[in-house]
Amino acid sequence: MSTVEEQGSDLASLATEFAKATKEVKEMGAEILRQKNNGEDTSKELKAKVDEALEKQGALGQQVKELEQVIAQGLKDMGRGEDVTLGAALDKFFEDNPESKQLLATPRQGKSIHIPMSRKALLGSSTTGEALNYPGQQLPMVQPAVRRLVVRDLLMPGRTDKPVVFYPRETGYTGGPDIVAEGALKPEFNVEIENVTATVPTIAHWTDISLQMLDDVPYIRSYIEGRMLYLLKLKEEEQFLNGSGAAGNMLGLYTAATPYAQPAGVEVTNEQAIDRLRLMLLQVELADAFATGMVLNPVSWANIELLKDSQLGYLFTNPQTTTTGRLWGRDVVSTKSMAAGNALVGDFRTHAQVLDRQDANVSISFENKDNFVKNLATIRVEERTIVVIYRPEAFVKGSLVITTP
View (cartoon, rainbow, N blue to C red):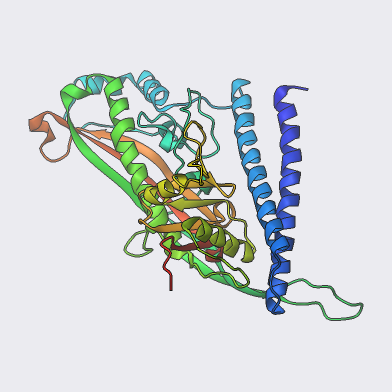
């Protein structure tokens, strides 16, 4: 059996364990709800078991994700995957289109160059760090020890070929399955569905650049990677989180999320930001979802990582480690797109999805304003994408600033 096949077998076993752990968490959540409905206090033993089960579930989920990436890399090494970076894509484009390369050297009035790119090519080789990696892909390059996660990394990927998308949004449900005696009526399940229509927005920007700077392809590559594409992805992240849903903006995850409310039956003394995040995880669990990640402002995340015990040892991190941020077994995205003091926790992998209509693409034109008389060219980078939210209850937003009564 090949190494990749063995890893596939291991992945199947891990997926089975993850499913069992998820079932265990849901059963405990149901028990907590039952006790709450009966006016009973949740025991410390049950709370401890829930914490242990959540840790196990989060760890298994991370192992599944990491093994999927290893297998993807293995398939690529065997020749079953595509090996594309921005530089390779640009080089191949100009190799296949020598007239375009000639046009860079000797621009002519009325001519422009359009360079289509796969998302994998454009997101796979940023000179500013690996903030632009496409989720689930292992890139054919040396990875840095620490890679900044972005909101896109948390979300389920997808595509659309329509300018307008129609999708269902669950706003609540009643009823559900139960034990049924012989001859008795079966219980009814009623789910409230809202049919949503959303226009896929365009995110774009452009800049003028001198023809002297366009003499060599490596410069185009470095400028697009280092500045234009990076800024495009920052705007994408801001929209994914905070889009208003009006005036052409997409509806962001934080905008649509359910406000935090302390779950009943939980007792917290001397509440800290770390406690609030744990309670937000619980609120997601009690909504019959599994929180797969959390989004924090960099200041909030730094304050958590700086927490120390009485011996001045760090509680949640080690300055010498080289892993990405994780808390309560969940991935942490630290981004300035999240307002200071706020946080978002949710089931990003199941109840929300990114739909890409047009991958980021580059166009170079010599006909814009007074380019001809100034010996300038215009570079434009744009994409069309949207985040859709299937179940707002699966996302919880709130403040980490704890106020004492």
